[in-house]
Amino acid sequence: LHEQYGGVKPDVARDAHARAIQQTVDDCLREAGVSPEQLSAVAVTVGPGLSLCLQVGVRHALDIAAQYSKPVVPVHHMEA
Image (cartoon, rainbow, N blue to C red; front, side, top):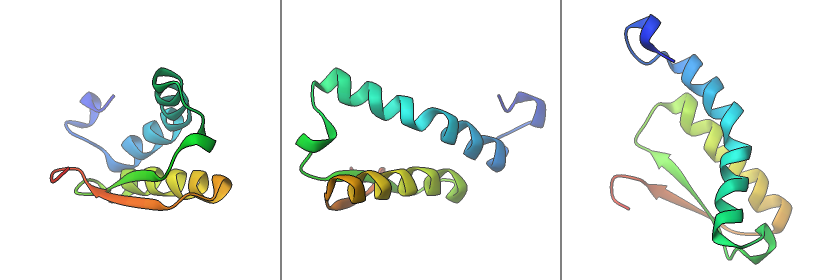
């Protein structure tokens, strides 16, 4: 995906994240055998990482949390 740029191009990475996030979440929930209503919270990586990519995840997590009235748990993925 990024080879033609010689490294990660943040806007291209963001767009790839945006295209993949819904299917990724749906797949994870299905594999776990749970529905969004059964979640006790929505965890989301808040760093470190590319801010454009992190924003995609945070926005999606906030949307899910709002839709299902769940708290959001920010996660530092290096510490988790």
